[in-house]
Length: 104
Image (cartoon, rainbow, N blue to C red; front, side):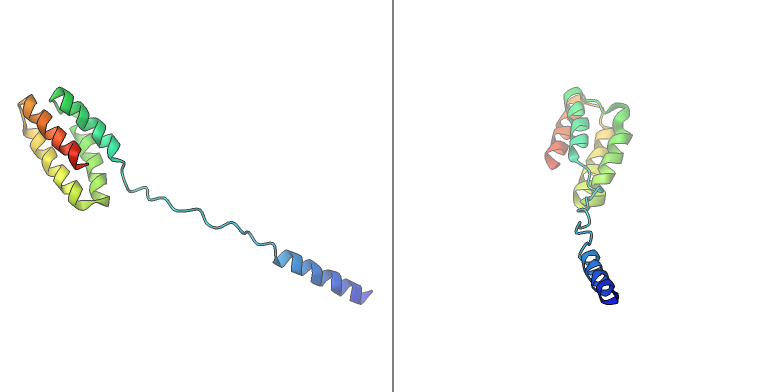
């Protein structure tokens, strides 16, 4: 009887030991990258209207996020945004907004 219990315990341990959680950790997603599409949409509005309006701070915020993942692109876009904010001629603003879209 004692031998039988030992065999059952041994088989039970082998079964349990083989039952691991075979699932691997989920793939990580880099959430720091900002889809340029939100910036692109904002700049397309400027390219159509020629006016930056009150959205300049949200645009700056989104470009800052781009800068966190691609510093060179972010710096260039922020420099252009500074120029865009100072523009008073709609046609100039439209042209600059289109150039900024191309940089995305």
